[in-house]
Length: 64
Image (cartoon, rainbow, N blue to C red; front, top):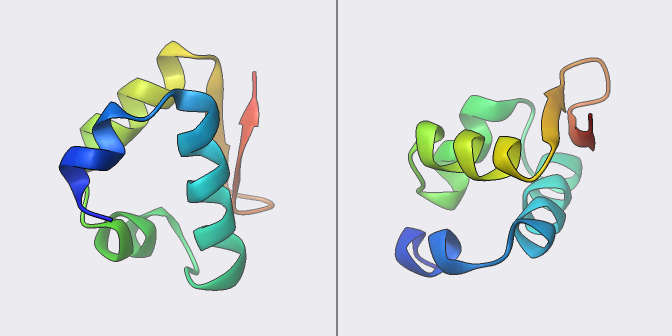
């Protein structure tokens, strides 16, 4: 899936995709941004606007 399509997804779907990639393929957020080929600011802003933040202790996005 390319970054243009990811950017148009609802945050609730996007967080599921991001967390799955973090769980299965990516050791941290930087690897996630590379794996999804998405700008870090775009992903962070979209998820933050919907109340999600990254928790490095469990390598997942969680509700605030």
